[in-house]
Image 1 (cartoon, rainbow, N blue to C red):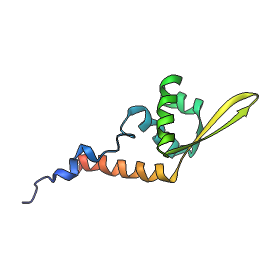
Image 2 (image 1 turned 180 degrees about the vertical axis):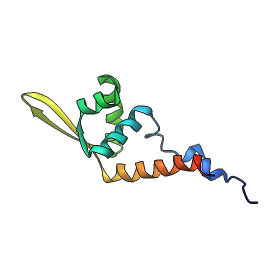
Image 3 (image 1 turned 90 degrees about the vertical axis):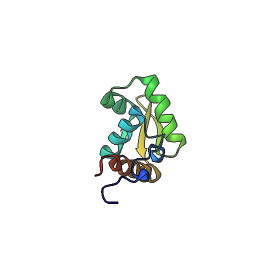
Length: 104
């Protein structure tokens, strides 16, 4: 049956629940673009609050999607985030799955 949609193409259950959050999605988009960024850069770029962003970044870190290098700059704590290979693969898969929702 030509033109009939396959259920698996638009199955919302295939979407990565971890990435399918506005803040986590925005943070991953930004990290993919810049390779690494400080917590402050991510926060300011995606316009999140400190509390919100810290919770979401911790979830991405626990999943192994981002790596956080904690250091100090001028005696102040500095967190630098990078997307991991696992995170890159998951994000690529996620974008492909979202793309399936728009495929004809």
